[in-house]
Figure 1: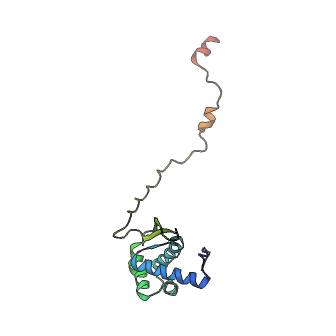
Figure 2: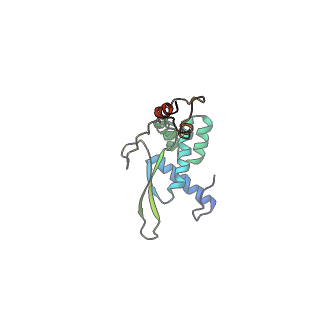
Figure 3: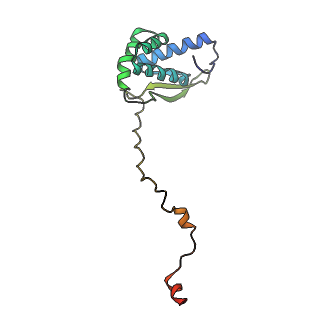
Length: 159
């Protein structure tokens, strides 16, 4: 299952809770919860399995998520939506402190979808290409520490 926080629950309850939350996230594409960080890890893994598209990936995903409609959505709609994306399929938005137990609540949602709470940031442009360094040219540091320059006047004074 991986290294997750204990969340104050025994292992079977914790796994069952994460399975249900990931399934509901895939089904509704946005949920509000207190354990969004753990759900995010498993949801990103499930989308990655959907992008793989192999029979083994389908079996692994169906062993974790609940419902055939959720597995179908993972392997068709979400896999197509994120085919060019390398990772980071979900977004966390901290919302409020829950009244009663003061637990921090957060929305977790898929990015690049309709009705997003916050728009995705534009992609950062790649840094400009630098010219390759020539090892035979003098570096700026060696020129900086070079000896004093001999001026035109000092040459004529010596003659």
